[in-house]
Length: 118
Figure (cartoon, rainbow, N blue to C red):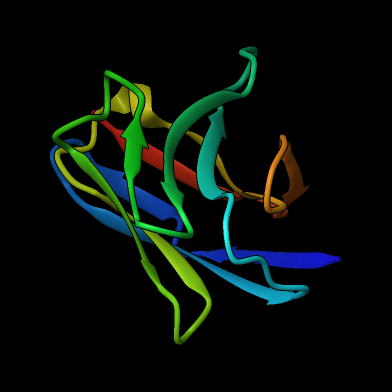
């Protein structure tokens, strides 16, 4: 099993920045992906960003590309989401997720609230 614990959420004004962290523990994988998803009130959970464990390729939702950056620190087994130029529409609960070496996102954190005020 993999345990994921997010931190770093909070309240910020539009145009501000936050950095989310996701600390992973338990079983480790050499490939597959780590990702961030979000869910706003009344909406479905949506993909935000992902990074491959091997090679470090990154992927972003179109509306956050250029504003958000996903990165990883393998020594700390931690993934980060740096969020800049935040907008009110970025308000959501942000979830960290992980795949195994292949397959879907099987492991999820408990979520951290991000609120952007206008």
